[in-house]
Structures are given as structure tokens and as C-alpha cells.
Amino acid sequence: MSITFMLSFCCIQLFACNSYNESDQSNSPNNFSITDTSKMIITIGTSKFTATLLNNATAIAFKEKLPMTIKMNELNGNEKYSDLPYNLPSNASNPGTIQNGDLMLYGSGTLVLFYKTFSTPYSYTRIGSVDNPSGLAAALGSGNIKVTFEPN
Picture 1 (cartoon, helix red, strand yellow):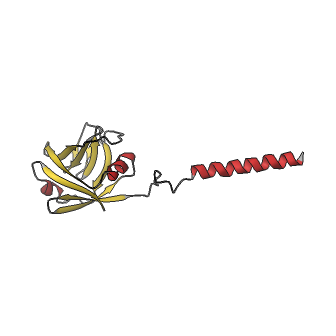
Picture 2 (cartoon, one colour):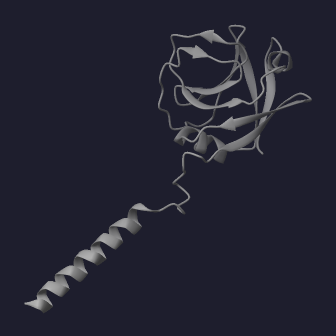
Picture 3 (cartoon, one colour):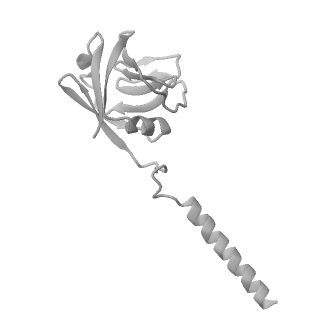
């Protein structure tokens, strides 16, 4: 009887240790802690801006596509957008207020860089934001423009 008890106890201990190890995959490349942050550089003409990417599936997939230079089109006097040649994972919600420097995904394939703060009824997936958007509107100008995104 004591052998059966000891074997049962050992099996329970092994199972508990194995379960803990399976859930503690902190070294996995697909698992990011809340404190992980990623930086990138946004270049517009001769101006450079540092941006912080969020820790979500969209930002991670976007960063994997960097570096990229894309033509961004003017829209509404407050944003530049570009239809990407691929889709990114999305989890859209209405932010209520867009902030100057927000980088977001509209739908699953339209990258949007906002250069003014305003209220919105639309839903977006957040990717990140420009750390110091001072001068962003002037750098982007009023027409279509080429923008380069690269990892920092």
C-alpha cells in the first residue's frame, strides 16, 4: 500500500511540475511580457521621429514587415494613410479620441498615421504612437508623401 501511495505522490508531483513548465514559456518568441516595448524610427523627408510600438499582435506583425517605405495619402487634413499589400491581425475598437502621432490600422490592411488630435466615430486597431509628435504635422505637409518605417 505504501508503494502505491508513493507512486501516486510522485506522479502528482511530476504532473504539477510539467504543467508549470508548459505555462511558463517566457523564452518563447511568441510570448511577450507587458513590460516589453519596441521602438521604431519614422522618417519623413529629412525629419525623423521615434515611435513606440504596442505589445499586441498587430504591432508585432507590423514590426516583422519593417523596414518599409510607402506612399501615404492625405485624408481629412488630419491623417495620412496607405493601403498595405497584405493584411495584419486586427482587433478594432473605437478609441473615442485620436491623438496626434497615433499609428493605427483601419480594417485589416490600411495603415494610418494621425497628425492632429480629434474625436472619431470610427474603429481602429492600435499599433503605436510617435513619442514626441511636435513637428509631425509640418513634416507630413498637406499632400501625399513617402514615409519610411524602420526598427530602432
